[in-house]
Length: 586
Image (cartoon, rainbow, N blue to C red):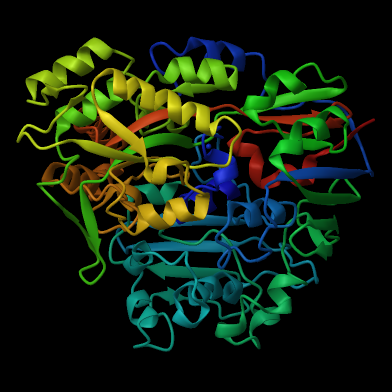
């Protein structure tokens, strides 16, 4: 959950996690992956656990992790992963990400007074023994909103809080809408909103923060020095089951138990998370170098017969997608502006491109069926919000050609031309970072060539991760369409990704219908779950038809876990307390 929350807020997914190997439900012709998944449980076998022992965990990345140990200031999924044994959210959830009262804090919504009350439980203490208090609940909002911190995780959603915008703009010295009724040393804050949203019942909703920050420990660090401070980089404080004992910058972090942990002493004596390259991941699993390591799906055949390992899996809230550029981001106005004359602003062209992609065959060949086609932008993990009736775009070259013919994309020699008779050259951006990325990209190019579309890679080659997102985010005119990926927040609202006023809408499409549906998803009417589900289903059908964004695949995220360990689970309801319960079998 921590990982999803971070990635959902940031929007861009780390290349190693999701480039073209994908990590993150299912299409009409995608049963191979679905059947394989049934072999994998979501948890290790439940057995009696003993106290003690050390665990080594692989962090699979080809670059050093940044090492920003602060939920408010971290922007990388890897920093979130490396902090997991110590970092605990304020809230536990059920398996559909709805907040409950079982975690470190409770949350109550008052629609009449437009308030959210958060109370941290007595006995929830930082690893230095101090009780987590009201100021610790309030301080993250200051860190996020004060421009001196350069916190990238501040979003316009926070401006639903009274006084937040004024504080963010430097017009106020405090946030008027956050009240501490029992004082800073109490355990409760009351947040006053302009309007409550139905998604506030879920983790990852973006309207209130789900972590605390140790004010007593950070208060003397100036905001502009916070991110680089020793308090954040070398000796961070958390209230989770473990505390940091040693950091090798960018390479590894070791943890020992937090003796003040509110749920009781964790089972393990030590947890070490260490960087390993993706290319070395399969060998590391086979040699048992790590007790917990993520399987690179393209390497499944190399590791599947490894002895003394339990493979557990989940289908994360993620998907890879094909996006079409149809406009630009207007930074001054803070909104997306659609270009009606854009090359890709033709629905028939977009649909034809989608029908020509043989996603199932690619997944079977390159990922052992562990990647699988998805038809809609709302994953099954969101329960009833997912619309399984969305048909998607199954491989159909004949239909693709019919669409192009009817829309006036006539063949002139080998290639088709635009309806106005001008040449049609389409530049496709795809990321490097996976051994099969080049083969997969070339496969798709070949399919598009079969229907007469002159599609080529941007720059004639795959694009490096950072360069890729630089081009996509800044609307490089040399990019007509691109393959990227989302990891979603655990609240299903789509406004932060596909709204008119979000810079993360990388396609830059803006339509009246889309705006209306996104607004209704988060309206007061949507407190009625049935109504909200209806709007989500309507939006999925609309997005499928318009094809500005075409979902391609999700994948099973498989962990290889030492068979001597128990208590490891991928279920959403277990994530917030995961590291308090993992231990060795008696």
